[in-house]
Image (cartoon, rainbow over all chains, first blue to last red; front, side):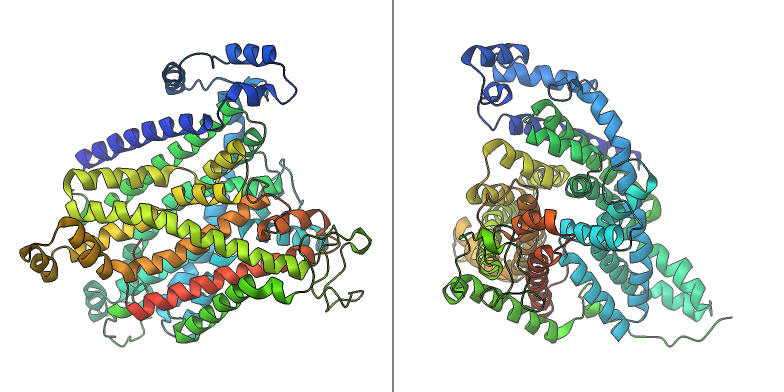
Length: 305
Length: 293
């Protein structure tokens, strides 16, 4: 068990380092950063000043090691647009994105667990088919479009929720619903197939033979086994949701890390861009690690690995 | 209170496969065929030009609403351009980007997956590592950053999405290659003196192709949605090209008074992606391919 965890952590660190390298290279794609920072009106002298100020006159590998070295201790440099340290900016924005992610995941689980279980227990009936149809349509809905529809209906026509911005808990409701929608189809399908598989297994037959109540069979025996893939996917899904929240945060002007990423891309603020990519990746790596450990705890068969 | 439960025989075939059935498959094919037809010949059939502005006729509603104009079946946008002509042209962009992205990402993912699954060992370790790394990269953010830094354009969007969306191809190609590499026909090919490339391309690939076809539909749907999202955020297909995502973005400022400007391209997007997913679902049931993730 401990060896398994140690191996997974080592892999996670290696992946994080690779992503770090890629994030660094990504921001160098545009060619001459100094020119794009200085802006179209800058003179040659201005560009040279910017180049010096940001250390862009050094060889690429020096820049890379300087950045990684400082990033390891949480120093991501200065944002030139926000006039603040990148670490500060992210620290301020991160709670909003994490809140949004957790709201989205909770809503997604509240909808998809009952739906998936219901579909599995009523397999091949119209209920099952309706649930499947719902997941297929859900998968096809563009999230930014759903966001706009909610704005029109809930924000304008019913007037019960604020259309955009950050501040109160109400600002998280619509983005949370939209974010949940990105996870509901996959989670529902997984719950359904896990539940069908569990209900058809030998231990359920044994439980039935023992004369256990239907509720006990479903919730104590089947659900626990069906939950294993759902738990791991839910953690992974949260990682995806944090990464994917950029679109939703931008539509709703919710000032989280995703919105910060979008702003900094628009402003060519490369220290922020590479830090946001890295932070979101590290979250994902951490969550998949957590999923693997949770899996091992829930399923004794996986512990010897 | 316990109620008796009839013991059911396990139905392994139904596990993981969804049951929309052949009707769904037929509907999916019909939708995709319709959109394809619109993309290919639509602009020849619609008399209006998708790029010509007519500022005197801005935001005219579609035919089912009051105040619509005979010449503009789906109304006009904020610059007075014919919405039907733009919608039909947008189908071309969505399908083109979806197809090109799938070809690019398929080439990368299938190559990696087949090599990893076939050779195992160090090669497989590397492939698994590449997949893990790729999965930890936030797709939308990186795609936005690439387009934002390098300038927007159709080709760049395709290249970026293609380089990012190969993970599922690799996962499925790897898993299925592992299953088929020990089959007798592979050993037979070895004994017959077949070369390594021959075995990979002529023996392995055809036998995992059905699984890959299902993945291709999923990825195509995903690529179309992502392109729309990128264009919506202003970092995808550049204006005045009528990408459906861009049409929604341009209509956003008018949506409270003329909601149809975002409804029409949004529904088109939804229906196309639903159609592609229905085709994928139908293929999966048809080929008996288990859901692999």
